[in-house]
Length: 143
Length: 147
Image (cartoon, rainbow over all chains, first blue to last red; front, top):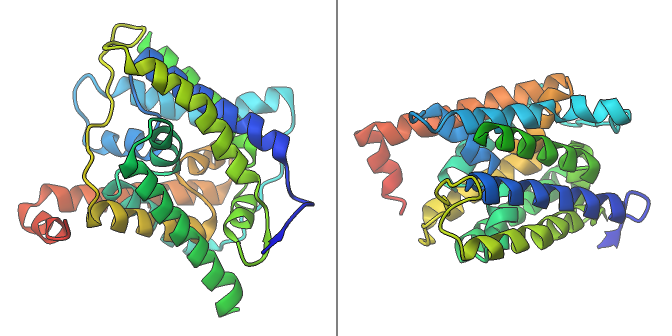
């Protein structure tokens, strides 16, 4: 294992992480909800009366974030190496997997670990391990 | 009022993802690539988020209502089963394929990235597959047998 020091951005990572934590704190303390993106979006596919507006508002906020960011600075460069078919496959797996696993990086990885849920620790270890193995196979064993 | 707070939360969440570098799939894959040049930054993103999040959850523990007087909807499930682990593994494979998870997918869509939009549509399709299986008794019995 070699650490990539040239791409290592500890301060941006910590500040960005703290903002994510702040957003989760806000949603929890004011709205009484867990900031789990897959759950917030997924439950909209089975809409329950009176439980729709806050979800839609959160998703709109997330989608509007780059626009707000652009008011202050140009958006950082984005690089998507996967091709169209890989992105379709990836999206499909993420959609199915997060619903069966009841959470993603935000719901299990941030909120679940923050509230010391063993279930979320296990889920986070599972998707992290699967992510590490997938990249290992695609980058180092297939090519 | 509730919608305003959740909109603001979504906005801050998205800004956090952009600042952290999570909205750049190449950087996420750099974190997931343990065998190559390993970019450890994203471990600090989770660390920073958990540090702040823990305080909020500690504060929420002693409350029965949110500051807006709404019920605190904390997860009650504690079961660790094949559904949880299998689902998480499927999610991890998808995450490793493109370096995009649900939050960054929506941010990429908002950035006007064409592949971000493709990801979100495919993710919604995947979530619909879950809904279809859950709603059909004969289909859900197949997946429930995984428990």
